[in-house]
Image 1 (cartoon, rainbow, N blue to C red):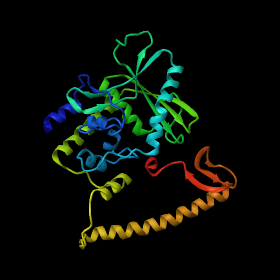
Image 2: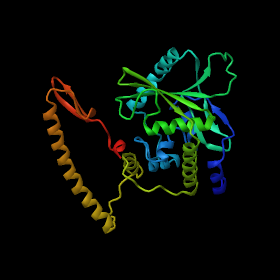
Image 3: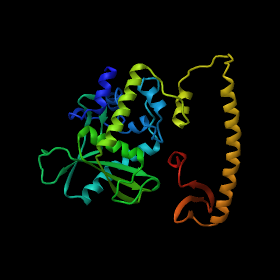
Image 4: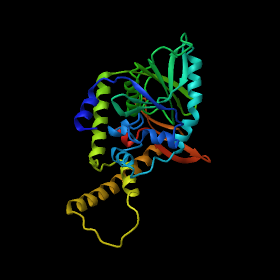
Length: 313
């Protein structure tokens, strides 16, 4: 696709989706269908919003220079709990028929791929003839960080991007998000289609596809996934010395010094927090959870922060 065609495709309304097939998530066929495009779980990485994948690592994966992401325990259990969460949603919403979804691509934008967890049809439509208006995404989370008041659209930004991406492909108007937090707290949220936000996603996706075609590698950033990608790219070891720029040497030294100072300060903060918590479980400030103390064999095992570096930015 030419650069002009990509630019037009990013802003033009979708003509509707085409079905690529029915694939098991994580299967070789599923990966193959998504290889040349951008899926809903990948658009957040394109935008620099994903805590799991960076633009840099995704670019190299799409170029075939890195293997697909290995399934983590979080991904595994999320997949295992998906049917249970969808069944719970169905029980609570008899007004819908809940059905599995194939993998789609947008006509005119074959790189824009969608694989929502479920379609929602009106219960009075026994033959599934009505247009697809609503979707369902099932999520799991260890805690409620990033999840706002139930019934709102206050969900983690990378999940919001995923929902909007799917809605844009299917020209649907609403995506329900059912999440199971800590394996016992079931909540529901709703994301409405927003054309302005969808346009931002499309334009970002088109630009990313252009850089793939042009071989323009993204800049190196501070994302953990970028560092892991750079670690994985070279193979072998040549016993040679490589000269680096002075400015990079100085950045390296300065970053090391700052990291050591920050590590000492973080340890001191942890000690003070644990001292104040005592035998309690959570550190709170102005009714907001700051950290959680976990215990093993009656003694403190870990002090878990309530926010991560990525959500704090």
